[in-house]
Structures are given as C-alpha cells and as structure tokens.
Length: 224
Image 1 (tube, rainbow, N blue to C red):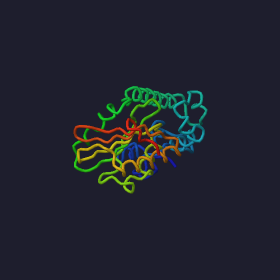
Image 2: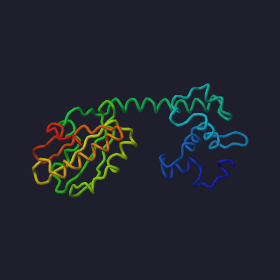
Image 3: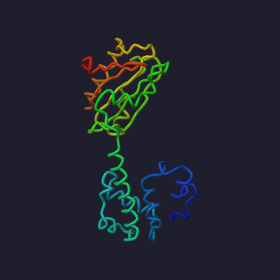
Image 4: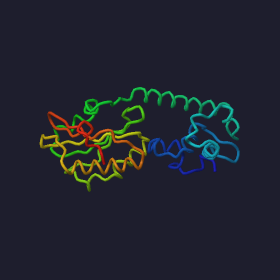
C-alpha cells in the first residue's frame, strides 16, 4: 500500500509531527529519509527491507554499496540516509566526549547536591560507562529508606537499558548525620550481591547531609 493511501495518523511524517520521532518505529524513521517507495513497495516496506539485511546494531556502519543493493534505494536516497547516519555518529562522539567523569566521591556529590537539604530521603543511582563517565541518573525511591522500598530490580533495570558498566549509589539523611544505619548496610550488601550476578560493579554508596557525607568505600563497607 502506498503511504498516501494510509490513514493520516499512520503516515510517518504526520505521525512524527503529532507524536514526536521517539514514537515512530525504526522502519517509519527510515521511510522519512527515503521519502518515496518503488512500484509495489512503499517507503515503509523498503525501510523494513533495509532492517532485515542490516540489524539496528549494524545500521550506522552501513555503506553506500550496501544500501544501493536494496531494491528501491538509489544513490540519491542512499546519500540522504548516509548523511543522517554520519551526523548521528558525530553527535554520539561529541556526546561521549563531553560526558562528566566521576572518579571520586566529591565529583559524584556535585551531581546530587540538591538532595543535601531535602526533608525526605531520596535514593539516587548514578550510572557510569567503562570510562567512569556519567551516562544516566535515576531517582529510585523517595521516602524512608528500607530494603523493601529499594528493590534491586529498580536499581539495575536502568543499568541494562543504558548499558552501564558500574553504578554509584547515593542517598541523603535528613537528620544531618551521614553515618550508615544497619538498614543502609544491609541494603547495600544486597545490591552489591545482585550487581555481582549481573557483572555490574557498585563503586560506592554515598550518604549525604547538609554539611558532610559518608562513603561506604572509604569505610570499607562495600562487602556483601
């Protein structure tokens, strides 16, 4: 079916304008770059053909000669796709280069400074890549910190999504005393054990308050 024959809300460009690019399927995004299809196949169909030959993980490495072998992709369409992919690779490289590096508790604290003065406990996880660069931050729970409120699933699910290499745990003590409680120690041990199963290192667990902090690593409390 020709894209123009589809209901308006199913056409890739209209769908992008209405819902944003993040809500389009991979083949629909490629269809926008392709612009037109060929006899018997829409741009969406050709986008699907490309993805069958070149999985998403390999897509950015596709070459001009690879693309023009797909029926319906001429040199003009291939150039548009390759230009978009090259911009993506350059943007990713720039993004990776500019990511903040966390090599010490003090550097981590600059990214969670806002929780020092909060009246409720906030448990935050910093996700790092293999270079110790911060790639994601997640607030896992808000409220009194207990093992039941902070479940390993909630801590490690984002790590798998962003392909983190290690984690750094942080939470605040509104009382003003950063000393780890028995509950803090128990929870940290459970998370270290879970991380070991997933081959994800927990680099530290920081407890912060208005004027001070405690580091599990510095206190030798990271053992499960």
